[in-house]
Image (tube, rainbow, N blue to C red; front, side):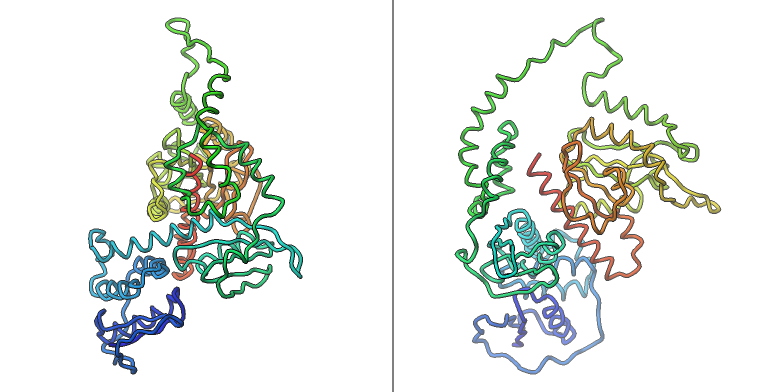
Length: 475
């Protein structure tokens, strides 16, 4: 029996190094006792020397690394052994990562999904309270994660609250940001965190004012915000009374709402004016197909209009159609669109429930021989096409709008912005929707360095997953 000692419960690098050595030494999964430093030591006898290495280095699919990085954060004590067993099998059969019916892969994948859910619960339900210390104002939050996710989540909070001094206290580990350096300390107790601050009273009044009883779905609410998180949310104290009074409030809203005028019929009906969203959207698309608002229509095959459910709570805006989109007449069907589909699947978002469109509806390109090379739209072209985008937003009224890339962000926000400074935080739009800015999937296709590409892809997936959770919560 060999023993592998890891520096912490989330020590992926230590696990990977040990697992590689054991696998190259031909050690079976049952022949390793995985231990975390500081935990109670096992009484099993073990061999001190590392196993001899037989054979050269080996590689595994990137999909294995992605699932392993998440699954290793699970609290299940068997996770290290399960991952090692999967590693050995994937080394010999890389195609195993595509077999979702395999029991071992399915179990590891479930661990990874549970960790990802916990990561997003932390992002959604951390509530900071302001306190004073020797450095001035500091914002302190208490959270009780189910898994070992605090370090993995630290970068998110650093990016989002870069200008604040803050601390997040958890039973296992605390992290602190002073505006420049992230530090750690030992776990804390609930009594170490503040109970409230003056801002919470204003927040509670606002939360009660925007609570819409007509949109209340208790099962969906409890699925996204389980009761165990309520004790750390100031607004949660209001929820029972708001839910209890929801039916009465909804009835009052219906009783006091104005009655719609009687619908005309027969010859009196104005056939030239669509009477529903579907008809209005169809008419808008038909008009866009003949658009000549800028010169781009002259060289494009056709207008590429948006598509998706007209009641979709989430709208994605790309930059412009590519070569394949121009030929097919549909958005996001080329290489970038195929990559987006895979990323959405990993983020647990159903593309069939999204409305996808582009800031510019015609393919801008230059010809090089038989090839048509993409060119970035200029400001006049974005402004000319903004009219169609505004009509789509006004008609569909999505709750969340995501701009993919700088062209989409400029169209949505009516100004030039940089992705690095704008991404990662919601923006209140003039329409009342919540706006987000992130990369375009084609950016990932252009990154030459594989390590950076994997890092950027993982961040893109996490951003979309968070946005998807928010869209479900408010739809």
